[in-house]
Amino acid sequence: MEVNGPLYMLEASLKIIHLTNTLILENDFYRIELEEFPSEQVSYLLELKDRPKEIEQIKNRISNEVVQTFITHNLLLKLGNSNFSAYFHRRTSMGINHFPWIINKKEQKILVNYKKYNLIKYPTFISERKSYRDFSNNGCLLRENELIKILAYAYGFIRDGKSRTVASAGGCYPLEIFIGLQNMTGFEKGIYSINFHDLDLQYISNVRDFKEFFVGEDINYDNVSCFVFICYNPQLNQQKYGDRGYRFALIEAGMIAQNIAYCVNDLDIEMINLGSYIESKIEDNLLNFNKEKKWIIHCIAVGGRSNVL
Image (tube, rainbow, N blue to C red):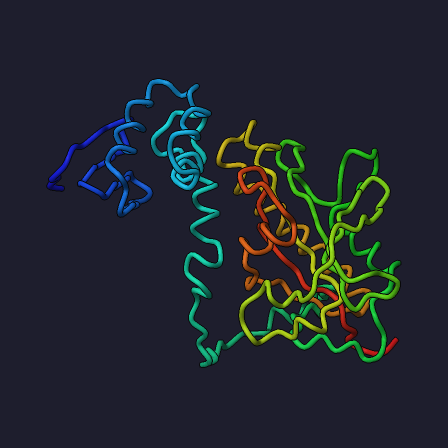
């Protein structure tokens, strides 16, 4: 690649190209172009590559947005172990490419040979699994005892009080669950945290309208009884596993979702795994996260009745 400006190699895989007011950061994984980047800020950052302890001084001299760019992706300053999982999380969050997928209305016909399948006896919690989008309550709201059972199945403690209902790499259990309640008997609409040691819910804040935090029009968010926000604290397993801890957290979140599916099917309650949540709005406005320490990685909508009980 032809370079028309200074080229810096801070490590074997990372190139930093400074072109007047544009800074290009490039390695084997990504290429980022930061336009209108003042040259004096670039020069100052380059001077600090061997002085990582001066991070507090950096914050006082250049804009916080610029600092966060470098801290989040660890592209320039040596501030500890690199965290590519943080970069991946940001780049795959809703808002980077708002509603990034294309809905193809053409249904693909797949021919299945049921000869061998007919020999398999599925339990009902598998054979009757279904995703719902309308969430019709049929005159019966989700009850507290049902919610507690769902949470216990999802991530509760079993046996010795240390193991839980899902496996976790290294026994780190880096996930935290928050609940958004509406259309729930005996509960004020809002956000709740959960103490899994006694399955106690703690009210955090009110929410005017949950559907503001989602995109898409194919789901009736107003009829949902409970939104399950599965969140990840990277410090709890990345000290042991590094960036690979993010992969383990996603697997763990999937097991939680599967447990919830088993439970709601047994209770005859509707659910759907959601990909339409807007991470930044939920993290900033609902959960008030420090986004360097905790991220939302999955969301599930629960509630509504398949049939009147």
